[in-house]
Image 1 (cartoon, rainbow over the protein chains, first blue to last red):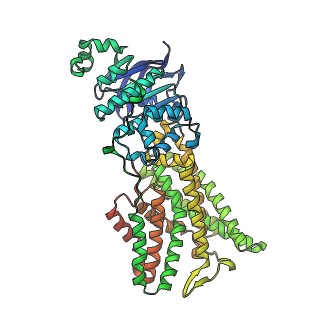
Image 2 (cartoon, rainbow over the protein chains, first blue to last red):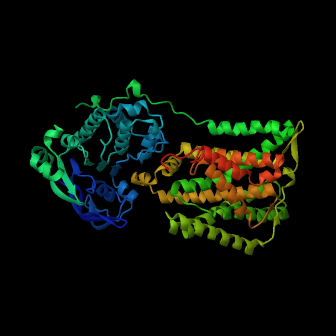
Length: 244
Length: 337
């Protein structure tokens, strides 16, 4: 399987703090790669470093074989990487429609959005159609998360980075989100997904990388990790029984 | 799982409230005008003062709108904005003086002065951003010091070119005098200044709400790193907004100079205080807040100037304190700031 994204020996400093200590990671094309780890392991920093929001102080990041470390964030995004941050990054003063138009580079206004793709998005997230002309700040937390994901897929992307989409959401909303992400997976969308919720990870992941102390300490198939309770305990301090 | 099961619409219990507009600041504006009626006593004087106040407010809005967007987009505190005002006013003295000498005074010279002032202020704004502002992105204290320094240098350059003394900027004959509605006299120039202010307002509203550039500006004011993560170069956008804001300040300088009918090299520093009050009252980064703040400042200056001239000296500071006690983030705070 071809790797769309490769990180080798990536170090990141934020101010005086050394956060990533040589991250090695491969994201295979057409798969959902889960990035797991305890709080503070460096998952969010890894995504932000890939996007150029934090500069990598050492190491190499290659996207489709081309180096992207040291590039500016807009340049990285224009190469086909979408980013859904932990905070969702919704423009709350803009309407749902305006948020979507902004994410679609080819569209100058709502009339130029790809109609077929929009219908597909509305099928995934019907709430967005219902509240199309409402300010995004008025949406519930779950609807904002759906908008954040919808914005990332409003145009075809080579890779989507999603940071903890289930955080703070009610279980029923999380199930809806899992369904939508499964639909994306069935379309062979390449996703690098940071998650704390092991149930979500097990439901979606093809491959998994586990981080600890700014390094990837385990890389393999998600099914293997899901089946090995001892490994979960060792890597994540988890018990599969607790997430069944 | 099928797609139909995904993303269930909000249940009736969690229905989203209709988008609501905050009318309270507008009500405050109307209340200020209404309270001035008995205080002024004479209806005709009230009409004259109100039109003068709204006209002054629109001129201040033209000047301040660029500054508030510059702050909103890049957190840049540009205390040097006043130099573009002064530059616009001095360019107007030269263009209108040349026009009068060449026999094409009147409206033609005013519009020519506006065009040239905007072009010169915009070009200087571009250089100002590149040389003075760019090295201090994200460093507020340094921004304050270096942009104030930039304004002082700009003032000195103006003195070198136009001299240190006050220069008259008389209104053309067509704009002298007033129109009378009953006993209420409304100066012709103020109507024209208000008209130009409204045109600028309409263009800004259209750009911000109906174009993708406007969408990017509004989004960038809220969360610029997310705009970059969507693939847009916010710094280029910022340079564009800085140049446009400088050009508008140049236009405002022409209007302000004609309003005062004279210009001094210190005109920028004088107006700077007023426009910072306006953008703080309105909510830093908010264009609509800037408009309401400018109108309030214009009205207060005219009412208090008539009713209690000594109070007029600090009326706008008092207005700012009162509004910040009511709404510490300004009248229309920008979300996410």
